[in-house]
Image (cartoon, rainbow, N blue to C red; front, side, top):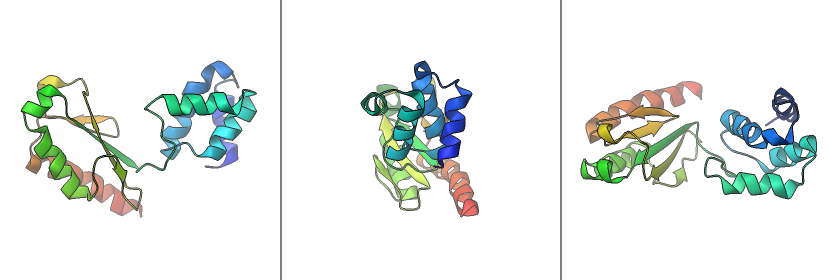
Length: 157
């Protein structure tokens, strides 16, 4: 990520150390992860110790210090989703995008993780892609949903 862009994000938050979490969220939103150089630049611009920035970046699960895919897929494995077939949905997702939970594909198109609850229990089984919730899934419906995101990834290459 370019230094000028990081500086603009910091400036948009008034250069205030109290905005550290939001600044990191904005950087991650654009970049899909937080490179070490970005953390260092944020610390420098906010005049806070680099260890504080790194502590925040490693404490919250929302942040990633490794490259993530353009499409972040989360499959709910909570009780309501589990009893309605979440494992079959997860298996379908893994087959469709070729990675296991906790992995990112080589093209940085997809990252996959499981979560304990997305908060849409009545719609289970549920999958979230880039923050958009897809509910009442079956393996066939899962494949249909992923097809649109796979096409977006192909078109962007």
